[in-house]
Length: 90
Image 1 (cartoon, one colour):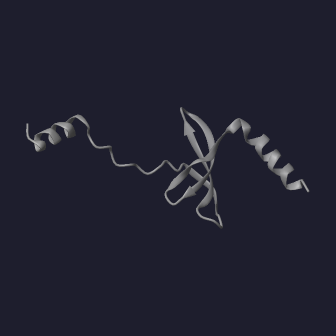
Image 2 (tube, one colour):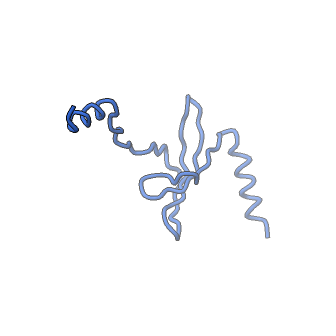
Image 3 (spheres, helix red, strand yellow):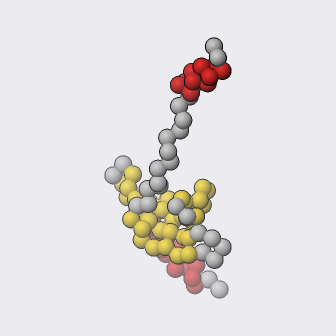
């Protein structure tokens, strides 16, 4: 086998990765630019028919890996209460 034939056989067995699709952005509820880079974004999504919210740092077209949290709809009231409490802390 020639090197070209070996490379062709290898390419058949190891197809290239599909092009990356744009991430699902959901319904964007709010966004705020950050002074360092990117933006903080709150969005509503659905998974298996259940709604959830994602709070994430986005850098350009993608959310930054490890810098996001998912919040179930049933947890929203607690989160809002805690945020209000945080605004009262001196």
